[in-house]
Length: 144
Image (cartoon, rainbow, N blue to C red; front, side, top):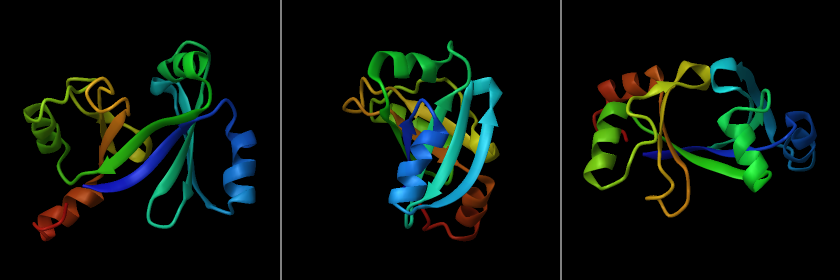
C-alpha cells in the first residue's frame, strides 16, 4: 500500500483553495462533483501524494453531518491498493471492519472502501484502487 491522499472536509472549496493553492502553492488538479455521495471534491498535488478537499452538496449527506459534528479538518487518509477486494479481506482478517460491505466508485471512477475509525485509532481509512493500479500490479507482482 502507498499513501494516495489526505481528505480534508471543508465548507467551501473556493475558500480552502486560498490556503492550498495560494499560500501553500500546491498545483490544482482535478475537480469533480459526486451527486450520489453528496460531495464536491478538488485535488491538489502535494509531491507524491495529494490533498483532497471535500465540500458537501446539500445539508443532509454524511460529509455535511461530519462538518456539523466536528467542523472543518482532516476527514480521512487514503491508501492506494492494487486489489481492493483482497485488501478488504486482509483488513477483516486483521480485525478491521469495513464501513460498507462492498467497494463502490469514488472520484475519477476509482473503486473505494472505508474502514471504520472505531478500529483504526479514530482515523477513517480509505482504500482506493484504480484500473491503472490494477494493471500495474498485473505487470509487476511486487507492486503494492
